[in-house]
Length: 180
Image (cartoon, rainbow, N blue to C red; front, side, top):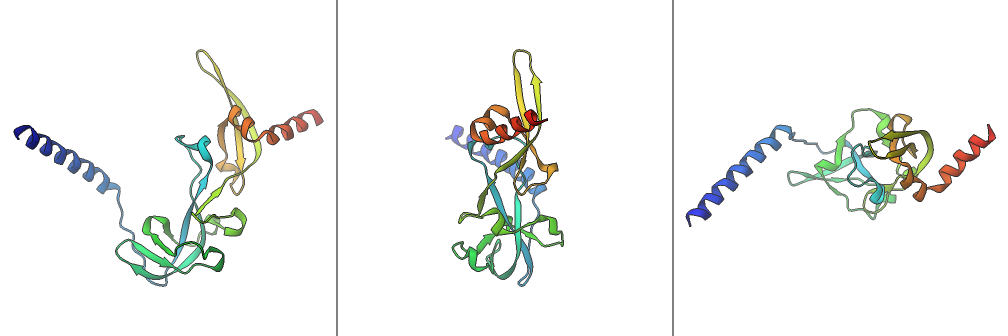
């Protein structure tokens, strides 16, 4: 029993320490009825993007009006007809208060939001190419411009992965080089 009590005390101390770390960064968000909020949707890029740093930032779609508050952390939104299949109640972490920055708004029709509030990112063009030299090997990367993204948000991707998934991008680039 002594060992069990010791383990329980150590677990409580560790949990308390972790809670204090998370409480420092946490900020309570509250909205009022009739406030306008953006709804967060996340880009789906499959296995290629999983676990990598520098993921494309979440996008917020057209502002919606809050109809009512449900509990402490959920709100019901007034959704348009095209999102009728989506349940209208969202956690506060999925919402962002409208502050008047229209560059954050992406129309839902353009990106094709699915029922699970995700959309697929599609590469548009290859902007640049680089080869990083390590001790024993070389890694080729390409800078990819994604649909519905600005040039500043282009990401570096492994050239082999991009060639296997999107070979048409490299055919266009080859034609441009041969044409010059």
